[in-house]
Image (tube, rainbow, N blue to C red; front, side, top):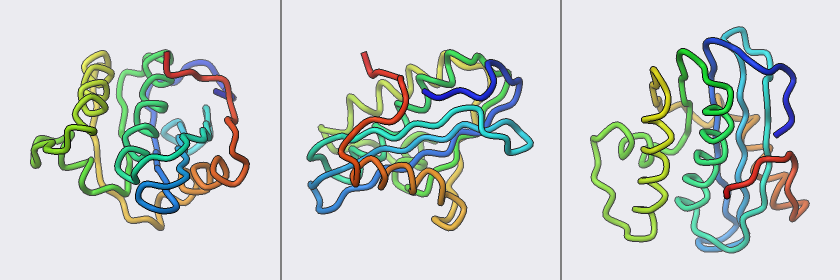
Length: 149
């Protein structure tokens, strides 16, 4: 993950997954900002052939892993995937068996953070994360240093 600053008390995580086909070539984008909007870190990762919802969850996991390392006092996650936001907020059950392990890992990361809010935003408010996800597909490579190990 490319970092502009090591620590911030309140962070915002923007994530987006993109898939060209469902399944198809996919990418994940994650952008972490401080409360003022200054970029703290960003990531673009090519995921290979996965579904759009899997790409959305992978983007979230990449971002959450980086946020956990930064240990903020408060985190707001902003995503344009209404399905995943509603699953994380307990409004929808996760019925897809391919998404269950990804959902479980996301919940584990969220439990490690002090104060987390997950909100749905329109695509127009998630442009930078979308750009990173599509950049990953276009370049078929990883930008940044975070791993999913």
